[in-house]
Image (cartoon, rainbow, N blue to C red):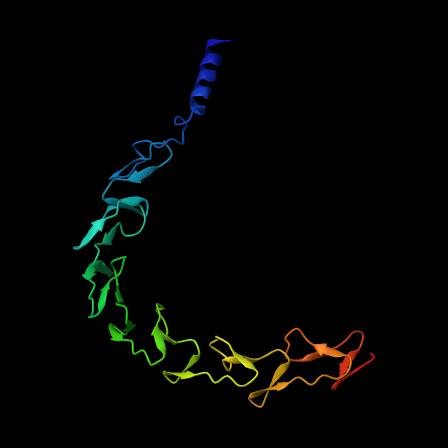
Length: 220
């Protein structure tokens, strides 16, 4: 191999090696207050600076905040017990019967109280009711056998041939198998010949291949 050809071959291998290509980041391409990323492919802002429009801008940390040293966001966060307000950190005002949340930027009401506006009001539990841990609603529910009606718990009146149903909708009871709802009570299901109770147990259907027509079972 001729000397010139050998030099060109060595140069080609060197340019192909990682970190030695023409695309490698040089000191001239790194902006002020920044440094190479260690891979030769980019740069990062120095501590206390963040990237904005291709440059590194100093992070201005307001009072009652700390520097996060991350490349995204504002570059700072408020101390526990403070919350962001514009470019500042203001103290979280905790009303009576409340406590600072786990994140430290808001507050929660104590048990037996619920949030109303910017304060905590006491939960008034009616007779035959109990407190819940839900953050929504009235903060209480009625005991089994009772239902809420205009802020009080009223007993569910289960008629004859029915049983209690623990549900927030409906009448609070359901007819036993073989009975159906009729005028607020449970009446016996009257079946014609060649019929049987359906899967609900509160109505009937015809034995196959007969089909229901009006109140009797007939051939299709």
